[in-house]
Length: 469
Image (cartoon, rainbow, N blue to C red; front, side, top):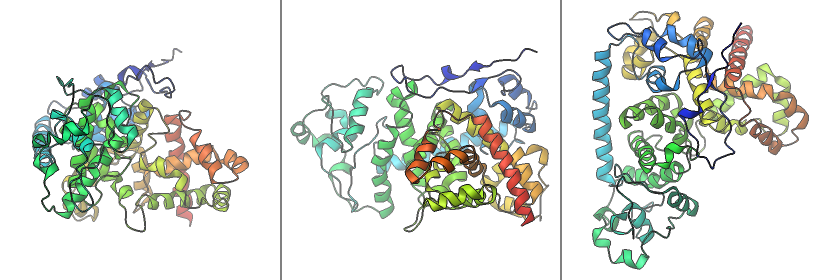
């Protein structure tokens, strides 16, 4: 019987030719397995209601065709209700775009670099809210009068200039900038926010302090992709993260968020749509980024990972504890950025959509938009019980087990990786450095589909053992 070998998807996420050491993408578009545009559109009624159960199994088997990935993700992440019509979604989309525009304008009023097509990679303000008068820093933020030559027909900046800024880490300038003496004479052209000191609210100060941190991460994010050779795409990523940091003041911005947001920019052309897709993803993950003086939010998931490993592979758990790794901090990165560093760009997208299809809950939209009503449903006081057919396979298992606080599939994915490396860790790891090295060696060598299958098997096994205790 003929078997479709699949079509490589690398052309959709073109890699810069000089980046030869990038892991090859294993994901392939396969007829009959990958969710195609035809199958996706056929799952909608004439009014636009989606029978998502028809698509979940296809996504779990073979992922989503890159040409429709953005719109599929909007449903998987709970941006839209599958029961909504085309008109419903158009109205929601316009309302959200307007809301994003308002938030962005608010941010622009606080710092004019927002929405300007530029980004900041050097601090412009002290922790006391006093503007930093370093001429080179001012040049980066307000270059209109400071550039000796300005290839700004489309706001583009060459990659070499961005790299130089990033590597300096202190706002040092490339040779295309004017000298500090020239800048000093041009401060009249710099916005007042940079040259005058008006007492700022503490929340505004905290937000402004994060802007250069966002910039430093943005210029490092997915830099192997041709997409980010364009300054407008870098600035779009920076703008979205800057706006998010303002509206979610409890979390703000943390390193790793740029890795989570980057695919949204690539998949969704409209900046506001990309923002809301990222915001929905952060609803799932924001607890990982919440920090206090004594703890980091992801420690809860690391603790859950330790519990799972202790139940399913007690010998490995004991070995890791003996090595001083009982806190499982070596898995920190995998959980924070959902395996972005362990897989190629294309394979990480394939992994994410399989995870979200497996975890899919048809009440997601309602949970995010109308949490009070969703809470009532959860208590059984109102509303129709959700159809198990509309849920992902992982979610169905949790429903059948009656689990009150189910763990995310990402924790079982890490447990699955540890299981595949269990023998090597037991035999070769003599310290935490060895554990980190062994786990780093998996980069580019993992199969996303096998990892998800392994996670599902461990999840089922864990639920059975938990039921017995």
